[in-house]
Amino acid sequence: MSADLTARLLAEVTARREDLVALTQALIRIPTLNPPGKLYREICDLLDRRLLKSGFHTELIRAEGAVGDSDRHPRWNIVARREGSGPGQCVHFNSHIDVVEVGHGWTVDPFGGEVKDGRVYGRGACDMKGGLAASIVAAEAFIAVCPDYAGAIEISGTADEESGGFGGVAYLAEKGYFSPDRVQHVIIPEPLNKDRICLGHRGVWWAEIETLGEIAHGSMPFLGDCAVRHMGAVVAEMEKSLFPALAQKRTDMPVVPDGAKQSTLNINSIHGGEPEQDMEYTGLPSPCVPDRCRMVIDRRFLIEEDIGEVEQEVRDVLERVRAGRAGFDYTIKGIHSVEPTMTERDAPVVGAVAGAVETVFGRAAEYVVSPGTYDQKHIDRIGRLKNCIAYGPGILDLAHKPDEYVGIGDMVESAQVMALALHGLLKA
Ligand SMILES: [Zn+2]
Image (cartoon, rainbow, N blue to C red):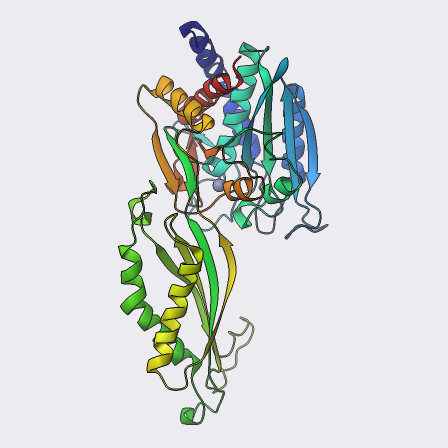
């Protein structure tokens, strides 16, 4: 690319700074809380108006029948496409439009979109309405400077990423929106920091373990069998053998933060005995020996690991407990899984964004892998599209926290990276 064209693209994005801020604010001011999945239609309508004005052809797609979709909380998505002046490849920017609950500890209005100290504040500012706005402004700036590009640009706003993406990217991928003959490059502007390229994520295996006992009167526990004590033995065995073993498994994936460069396991919850009563209930609990205790585990695994081995490792823990403990019985079932994924560093979208990062920041891009999954899993598994990365403004650690914000300078710079990457991929 000529130095002159680079300078024009960078300047065109910079000139749109106020517009970028205003768009981010407008997106934050629609509280698309998920769960339950509010106001998806409203935010899609806003994006629709904006992208139509910029010459995109738009489609509003409801993920009818998907997990979470209902008439009360319909899962609306938008896919916008703008053809260039000739045949070529398609670059797709995919952003999720949902945000997580607000939580406590805010000092600003979470849906006010307040601008302070060079930042835009609000729930979803960094995860990921700032990234969505940056990709739109980047595309518009690129189109203004290079109206005769070859190929196509797509921008999507999708539902439900925070709850698995089934009414969003998974649904669209099933309908062919990410098939390799339609889309060749995908950039997901998740908040991975403006100079880092996220190649993929670790794998996930969630399982529910239940220990079985026998109910009896609490004054005579010897007549029953306490499922909670059995579960205690499971936790003890995990502490003794499983957690140390997981800490030994290190990956060559560049996972950040450092603590996630190994296999991890979280105990999500343990529930045993009688259910907790409603707040209105003022009586005492009844005296019973718990006959069931249930644990949900969240195991994150590495690209070097096989999901079958991951499952077997937990079964082995349970079998070791059984061997040493009278009356111990359990069930285990997997409830959710995602394979790890990592795009190759020599993939075209990686090269284009890496080159653009170097131009904008004067240093090489850092390659990272996310500890948790995001919508790349559906693009990879259902869409069969491997040429996909996450790249966007915002600090990952601020996601889901109180006083979430996105830096305005970071948004501008990452929009510059996106505009240059568009140029690189569409050969304008
Ligand atoms: Zn996100």
